[in-house]
Image 1 (cartoon, rainbow, N blue to C red):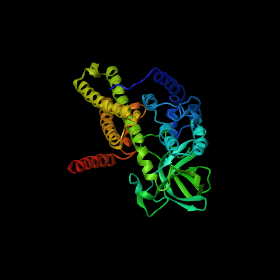
Image 2: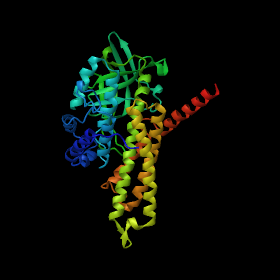
Image 3: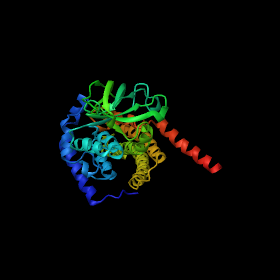
Image 4: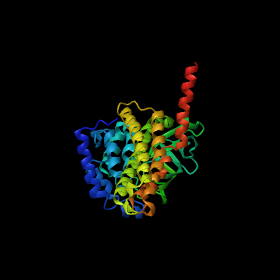
Length: 385
């Protein structure tokens, strides 16, 4: 199923390609060595209209659709360029503000995010609470016309550069998931501290840090959506996040197949091209089939999303399938490179390291299976009634 691209989408693709070639490719290796990108890249992306692609134009966004998000992912991952964390900023943080924010909040934060002046992050995970958000310990207690926030977050993408953080906190600690709220914290608030830059297996150019909140005070007007309805808000937005995660995994797998195919055509062994070996051809036949199946399903989910018809179960299925298959596909492709596949100078090696997180972030594979299993159980219960 082809995606409904138009001439406008292809013009956007050309713009992204030029940006990647000029502003990302020459610097990505140094970013990976540093463990963080140059902050200037954010303003350059903003100047080119490549941040907040889908946000309304009245707030500085591009007014585009999810197809443009998919195009951006494709062009970045063709060269295995995984930094900076544009997608978290533009396609996870910004939509929360667009969909849940007041008019005042949108006007205050979105234009600066669109220009790259303000970098966004979302703080869910804690040292003792990952996929189980009900177990978070960070609290936001009312004190007059302010919330006082205390707690710790970890594995935060864009954490070191962040100027604005959506914090998942307990506003009613005794109410479980019904006591969670989403509160925006600006990085210049007293008591807020950024911790160490975490060293990772992959995604080395993305800064990932710990965040600490010690009696951080923010006005009550910084809440997103309704108090104690944060868990519901998260569940509403998570299908989009998981669709993005599925798209990243799928494009990563497709890039691996392309890299392996190109290498097999150029590499000669035992007096002939690697492509002439039956094992090579059969391996490429396997992985090409796998990415084709994944692409068909992902495209269907993207079309559903464009029509506002993507439910949480379908998003979970896409995230599960694409992330699990990507790891297998990339591993098979790397094997064709032999020893060179283990050298970080080769994009396939970086892709292999980056891909391991596909099955973890945006909800682990185990959580995706639980979501899918519950939908099956609920369907069976409905049939029995």
